[in-house]
Length: 347
Image (cartoon, rainbow, N blue to C red; front, side, top):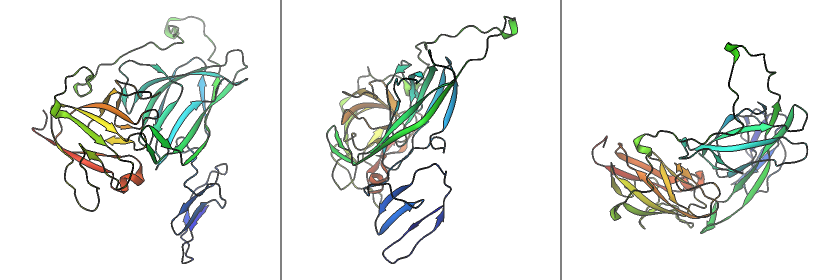
């Protein structure tokens, strides 16, 4: 299959694309023409009508053994959309599954697991989920599936973001098979029976992931980071910032290595805030179902709050630390900057 861009001059650029015969068509309204894939129109014309693929497959099936725990590792990539992933629900004839959150952005929760109803991801987000399913009184094998809602919310005010476009559907089909038949006891084959519930646990952490919630942060290390709604797109640090264009705007600030920083983030309901080098820990946030105080992240987009207070351990590394909005269009329009970490490397 192929797509073409018909521009104002009547020219068409052809590029061959592989197509799953069951994959839906999409359209994207572009400046100077309309890009269509596979020959029909589905989008509203505001933007891409998104479909999610899992490991490159559209609505794949995964088979799980009943009563056994599995780790699902989600890594989400998109240009502008965020996504919510959730179970199909307790429909008649559907299997029942437990979903327990273990880690986000590659860092274990301080106390895990955590029962969740939805997974909230924005481009670059990661989540590790423990999953266990049972058929109950249903015949084996039984089935259920995960659904998704993809939303394009490029602007808003405070904690409210405007949904410009939304789509959803089935993401992943789960088939639950019977466990293997039990064998007669013999010592080489003996395995202790596992519990149906995961035990709570905590992990040993490296120094750069020490819990910062009880740390006293000096006033000179407390700052305000704002990602404004209106153009020009930029990051403001303590009220000052520049659009990152074709010149180096200089650092947003100079901060010291080996110290703890506390930042008040605003504008993050519609600008996912991403930071390179050092992860940050949430110490205060209100009314969000997924982002909790104590959690560590390197990209964040809450759905119930427009702000958060986070702390960072400026551990070891000196030099430039990039910060930017993780919506590609906003980043390309200049909403990024860097902080200069000063001091002795390795502190």
